[in-house]
Image (cartoon, rainbow, N blue to C red; front, side, top):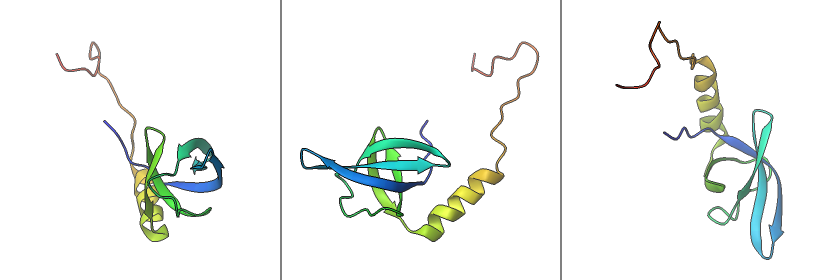
Length: 87
């Protein structure tokens, strides 16, 4: 399963003509290729999958999504003998 979490571009550069950037997800950063969104600017929000920024998100949508994700309890509880995996 893939969860699309908005991240904010904090830095950008080029490697052999390929646009690259650093995307921050709540303080954790990852390097991403910006080839699919070459006009992404520092401060813009994006979604990254497998090391590629896929699209620009408007700030309002990104912040709303982050707020909703912050309000969800993502903890998993297991009962005795329950591994949480289907049989």
